[in-house]
Image (cartoon, rainbow, N blue to C red):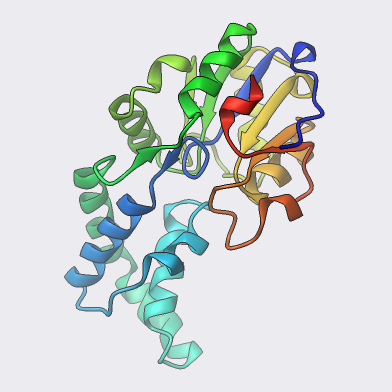
Length: 230
């Protein structure tokens, strides 16, 4: 654990969802597996999916399709992906909506960490690249929704993390300055967005950082559990 930040100098915290609060890899694997079956395409291993999570549903679907269609040459693969995308999107959305939260687990210490931040007087918002409706449903299903004043998804703003716009807009909603608003996430997407927005950032070490060690990312601190923020 390394957390050099002084939480007393902060007014609020923005918390990522997938890979930070909840391990949703099982949900992704289930919904994507059913989608691929619908499209009569080969399956994909969960370890591959883990490296693709974090940049929104559109990026995830394109990455999965690119992976399972790898035997095709690049030009043919690109044409095939565009031809399949609308059907893949509709199938994935339907399956994810049905499975959302059923194969997901709250990370140990996540609830305690949120309670500790609130006890210190910090206002909390959840900011994720997951679609907003899915994020709200998941937070309610896992008993975490009550911690947050605001929940924003990948479709809440014009751009997604790692663009800084969602963080700036979330700070506006909270009524706080970026320099006094902590970003807590699991990946380089969160860290890059925070740096560009002017927010301090702490990363968890257990999430979905595209197969890379979170400690290799430029951040202000790292924790093995959100409970350590207490």
